[in-house]
Structures are given as structure tokens and as C-alpha cells.
Image 1: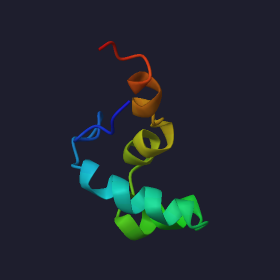
Image 2: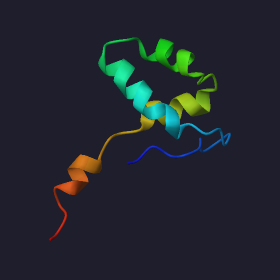
Image 3: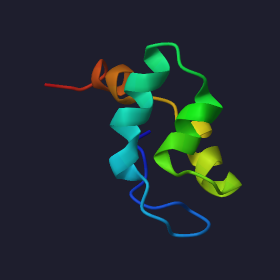
Length: 65
């Protein structure tokens, strides 16, 4: 699944924050603190980030040539 451009519920643009979020979380920072730094205050926007699973690499394995 790709990160949506806007939050499903409130419509706030969130896609531009995804790379920063992934980078900081992979460094071991607390997920909640990272979201607070990025300005994700609403629970709907936080849910989109927490519920997103990177499946593009898995789907790419099954591409036919």
C-alpha cells in the first residue's frame, strides 16, 4: 500500500511527512514523539501512519514481464 496523499477522514495532506517519519522511526525514536514533531496531532492522521504497510516490494516480485 502506498501512503495516501491526504488523511481519509479529515483531508489533511500527510504524504510529504512519510519519508521523515520512516527515517526517524528506523533510527529508533519513539513513534508518538516523531508524530508530534511532524505535526500529526489528530488520531485519524496517526492511524493512517500506523496502519500503512509497505507492500510495494512484495507486489513487485509478482510482476510479469
